[in-house]
Image 1 (cartoon, rainbow, N blue to C red):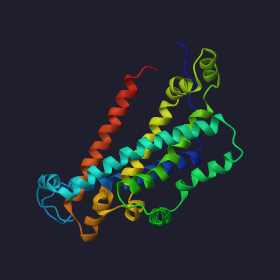
Image 2: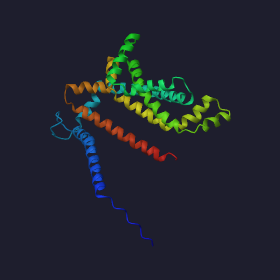
Image 3: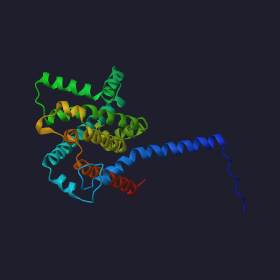
Image 4: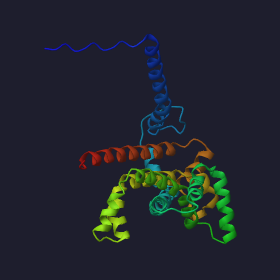
Length: 271
């Protein structure tokens, strides 16, 4: 029976570096997740003060479900995020394909202009959009909020799809065209299925950014289109509110459930 070769010993300096990196990583995870754990624990605290534990209760979850402004703001956020995601996926996918498939004289300039909303300060974008809508005579509301969210969401979809297009075999489209498909059918039945992972990733990013957006929405919303981040910010300005702990715990639970469900679907999908 052959004897396995002994594993090479790491130099003492490299061992020390590995221990340091492991310790630093542990501290980072503690810094990130301990506050979240404390938030969840205190969502079951009967005291209104988040720094004093009294007894276990589900009161704040019940009051959260009875809070009509929060429920309405959550519905507004879901509607705005859903519409922004759909429009961002369409614009990002089509835009990435056009920039990849055809050669424009100003292609690099267009690429730069598309990427600017990704790095522009949010307060600057919010003020500029407010001036634009005021100049155009548009009433602030759901339409202006959706337009504003699409402005900074669709570049993320475009970048994700462009990265996928770089590794796409151009022979796929050529084969579809040779077999009689029109360019539109070749794009829809051949290219889009190949881009599905990037489209899904971009859609998830767009939905998350839209649900989380506060500063841009603050400038371009109306009283009827208040989103959940705006409502939560208003409650947090007044003082510590245990309902916010309950709301955060519900969102965290929904996020974990969604990630586990996505992993389950990925495991079931054929390779």
